[in-house]
Picture (cartoon, rainbow, N blue to C red):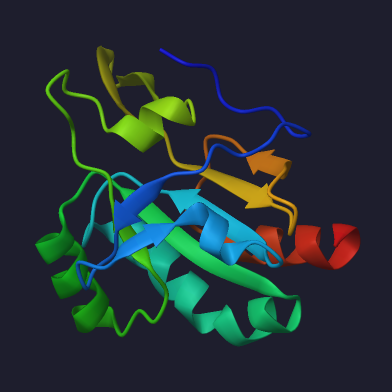
Length: 162
C-alpha cells in the first residue's frame, strides 16, 4: 500500500468520471486551489454531513479561490443519486475498486489502507483531505478526518495559508 502524499510533492494527475459520467482530470483545475477530499461511502451519516458542510461552504471556499472535489469508491450512479438528494454542486468522482479490489486513485494517494474498527482489521478508505495549490503541489494533508467540523478547519487553513 502506498504512503499518503507528503506536502510539497506534486499531486498525481488522474482522470475519473463525475456524477454525470463526465471524465474529469485533476489538471483541469490548475490555477485554482483544490480541496480534494476522499470519503468512504455515499449517503452514510458522516459522509453526508461532510458533503453537505462542503456544499454550505462553497461560496466562502470560492472566495478563497478554492474548488471542492469529492472522491469515493462508489460508482457514477451512486454519486448522481447522492448529489441530487442533497443538492451537491461540486464534482463527486467515482473511483471504484479494480480487479485487485483497490480503488486506483485512492490507493495512489495512499488513502486506501488498513483500518481498525471495533477490534477488527480490514482495508478501506481512510477519510483524508488534500489541499493542492494552483501549481498542482500538495500544500497540506488532513489525515484521519472527523467529518464534524472538518470543513471549518479547511476554511481556517485556507484563510491562514493561502
